[in-house]
Amino acid sequence: MQTSAATLCVPSELPPAHSASPSSESRADSSPLLLEQLDAWVKPHESFADCILRVAYADGGEGVFTLHGLLVSRSPVLHSLLSAAFLSSGPAMRPVVLPLALPDPAVTPHALGLVLASLYSPSVLRHLDDSTAPAVLATAHFLGLDKLARRALALCEEAVRRARSA
Image (cartoon, rainbow, N blue to C red; front, side):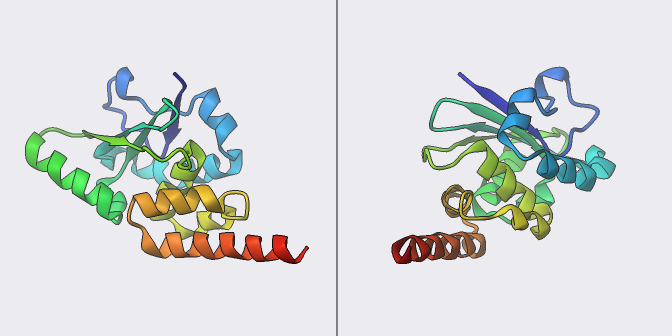
């Protein structure tokens, strides 16, 4: 079982078992520039992170993302998970752990990282191209991010048009 971790932010008070420091595996799956940008955006605010997203991918791999609930709640799916977790854990229990099973094999760790990063800053979407668009489309659709899904779909359709005319 492959495990990957991505750092959007790591609260210092987390015990080692919950640390989401980037592993060599996650760095291999993601653009180093993208991870560097993520760290630069959120490191100054890491003590405000209030949720840990524990992901189970369709291929059996796992991932951990330490996040800011206020930002990732822009996703209807993550908003629902956050609401349920905050209600059940009470206000004193932070960070909350959000389990997320991703049954679609098209959702990759890199695409999930890109989609989550886009909730922090849309500028990361410059990494969205023909090669990443299908996985980003699947991920954005799953998380209920319709605008991003439409953008990825448009790139996929354009790639198909170019391939047909070649």
